[in-house]
Image 1 (cartoon, rainbow, N blue to C red):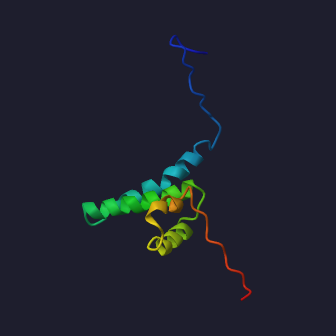
Image 2 (image 1 turned 180 degrees about the horizontal axis):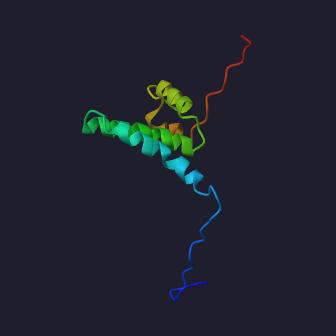
Length: 102
């Protein structure tokens, strides 16, 4: 039922285990918190944050972060600068696998 301002209360699930997904999503941040404390310096912490952002962005786009980073690092030196958006996780596609026939 809406309140006086016309807003509805959010539905709250009370089923057992309903917050497992949320807990699984924040677990890497909670576990990494101690590790990030020892980045060595502020700039080291910034580099680590950038790396974790890349990995998480790849995962959110349904891409294996290791395969994506391996491919992008191998290609970025010879990739045209005006087409860098092709290497972003949401635009990237895995390289075609080579057939066994030679």
